Amino acid sequence: MHQPLYPFSDTLVRRLREAERVAVLTGAGISAESGVPTFRDPDGLWQKFRPEELANVEAFLDNPTLVQGWYAHRRAVVEDVAPNDGHRALAALERWVVGRGGEFLLATQNVDGLHRRAGSESLVELHGTITRSHCIDCHAPAHESALEAGPLTCENCGGLVRPDVVWFGEALPEEAIGRATEAAAMADVYLSVGTSSVVYPAAGLPQIARQSGAYVAEVNPEPSDIAWRLHEQVRGRAGDILPEIVGALGAAMPRPDEPLP
Ligand code: BJW
Ligand code: ZN
Figure: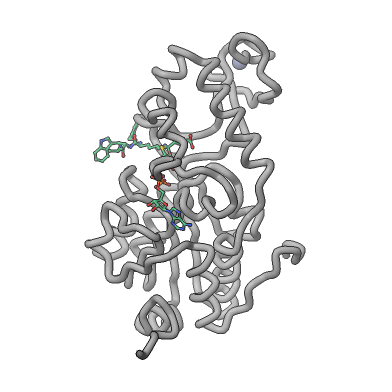
């Protein structure tokens, strides 16, 4: 029986070749193969801890030690893992697009910093970063050292220390969501990778791209909440599929040990 060469369409490859502007959205799924648990998959983080309990300011004020402890644990996980082929393929895709005189933007919902470590440069972090923290009162940057008994507080004013991430009910960084929205509206091809697309405004970005005329594909082993609205669903793991897309374009994949540019 005839087996197609790739699990994605010729149209996707052709549209990427013709594209002047390419934009990408990623979610927790792209880091799953690095060993960072997702939020909503069966063995995801929030099977133990529900988002309402931890990822909002009320929960933090209610039990700062619990929430700080959760982030300290996740920070330790992130420090212990490395970018995978999915992250590397997106860095390669950026180089390929920019090398042809095109424009590229990667908007990630992830707070783990793995895209930057894989060499992505044109990057916005929509939900902040887990590696930095600040005081909720004087806003001074703070170091999240090992947790002692009781909540971690600011050296300047004694206020509670929180991670530089975006919790439910909080606005996304204006510049990041602004650039991501503009890139979605301008894109010729839009890829949505490893996100369940249940959290807004990020989940709106592929839909903005589609309404603005982009060819929109998602890469995910499972259909996301908005899969039916997109042109193409590429079923599979990001670390398998994205290098194949990059390979179909003839773009070079960096080796895991390659020094960053
Ligand atoms: C693989 C794979 C592999 C597995 N390869 N794939 C109704 C409509 C619209 C909005 C709202 C609404 N009701 C409430 C809202 C607002 C709310 C919201 O969207 N709620 C929904 C739940 C309904 N949004 C907000 O509150 C946002 N702010 C806001 O709207 O502000 C308005 C405002 C304006 C002005 C002033 C004040 C306010 C903020 C949202 C912040 C989200 N924050 C979190 C926590 C960040 C910090 C942290 O990390 O702890 O962000 S929640 C969590 O979800 C995290 C993630 O970035 C986000 C998205 O999750 P993601 O990445 O999609 O992960 P999963 O686990 O859900 O999915 C993983 C996927 O990977 C799955 O599909 C797998 O199949 C797949 N996968 N292995 C590829 N190998
Ligand atoms: Zn302070």
